[in-house]
Length: 199
Image 1: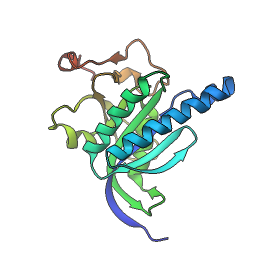
Image 2 (image 1 turned 60 degrees about the horizontal axis):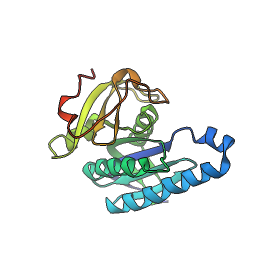
Image 3 (image 1 turned 90 degrees about the vertical axis):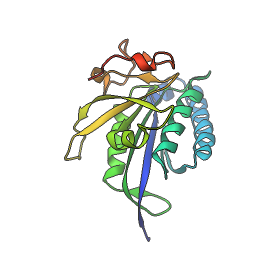
């Protein structure tokens, strides 16, 4: 199988608590996954993304632009908050990948997956590389959280949380928790400029 090397923005999403929901109410779990996929498909297409894999309760997709990936993530979270709400975590990283048309491999893929796993439900976490691409874009805002060491990654990764109306914005202490705590904030457009220091 031939592979090509390219730069890409890599997005992972995951439905929080899906396994427990499947054990408790299988029909509701199926409906939750169906809504997740319907919203994900339409929004990803809108922002020129390529869906590479569905894996149970999660997805892997790539974008040619970090800006497109971030805008897609924000719209995904907003769309998934409408009833019946789907609790989703999203992580995005940019980097070099080996792409075969059916799968991607590379250190950047691992980093994106690890970032998503640290996110809170309703939030979007991005790496410093993604932040560098969006920081001068009107309407796209992110706040720094902290540096973390990720499994099988030999250097610290700086994490940022996207700030937008309807998104959960975690504090540094929340990173890695599986449930939203009281310290997480739902940011609004009016409050975006007055968020506290998360460092």
